[in-house]
Length: 114
Length: 114
Image (spheres, helix red, strand yellow):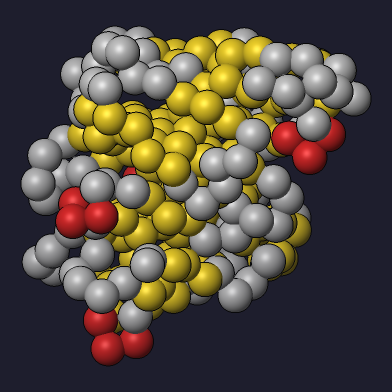
């Protein structure tokens, strides 16, 4: 069975500082990996996704993530955080072999200080 | 494109009442799913479908029924609502083919059971 762990429930970061959100997954084969963002009261928006190839993936809003197979990780990064990045972030793992089921982590809530 | 349309956006039920959450997609995706979102627990899969006439249970199926009579529609039924089903519900439609899978989410239904 696939699973996802996001170790940090909350992260507070100053505006302009860098941000890194951790994601560890468990899946027997090569997974599809995703990061979604959810603003308060809103649905989920896809930030980026990894399927194969280059392990450093660029997404929208200046985010990037790096797939590290040896560490079963897919951490999300942003060099300089803006106040509008305050939201909840979800990592997800899926696989076509698993019927395209997506399994989500518990989420990390990001607070941005002025 | 409408994408995934989910109704209603808000609902209050009394314990024991029944209701159906509607979900429709216009992207001709085979795979659709229902999630519930609770604080600190991320999104948990309730039921999913890999095509018309085919449904299966996810992680937390108890208390919910689904059917998939058409590719477009995937309603979620609560037969006898309980306070534990107070949550935010998201419908997702997944498509894109091999190597380009992406989940598209509805805007969510905030359900309160009193």
